[in-house]
Length: 217
Image 1 (cartoon, rainbow, N blue to C red):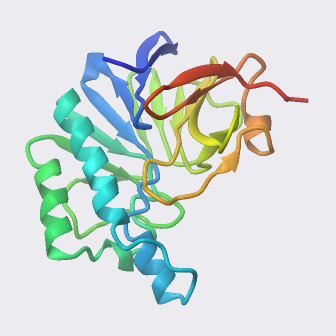
Image 2 (cartoon, rainbow, N blue to C red):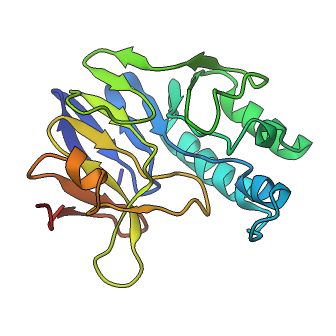
């Protein structure tokens, strides 16, 4: 299995190249910020059009991770849909998502874009505590053993900035998993201020790599 292994609160985790987080002992796969339906929401608001296949692209990536890892539990860390109207998927994508959910525990964490897709199967929680780890949408200062998303962190080494995990001794912030979601520079506040000295940025993609999160004040 490729990816970057690390330990958080004495728990062995792996940051996968796709942007998902794997907890092998619990067979738990975590993803954040799917933003399904982003293109349709922006179109409704009259904004710049995005490619209309972003839902299928995101579901295909999730499908591949689920097939590869065979998780018992999937946790979606909020902003799974761009808004509640975006949760009204077309029949093809709704059936695709339902197939992924079937046969496993599926947890939707509340995000700031949506309170959870209540018309779609799964559990709907504000936060999840499991063993020494806590799962929520937005990081809290002073938290320990925390897994969150929300900020869509990116880090630039050469060429375009790449989505990345931010990892320190107390927390991990996941990249946005959804297609065409944009991102925030990991060296700017509030991300820079949330991460402890010695934090790393683990870049996603076909050639994942972990680098010191330099440039902190």
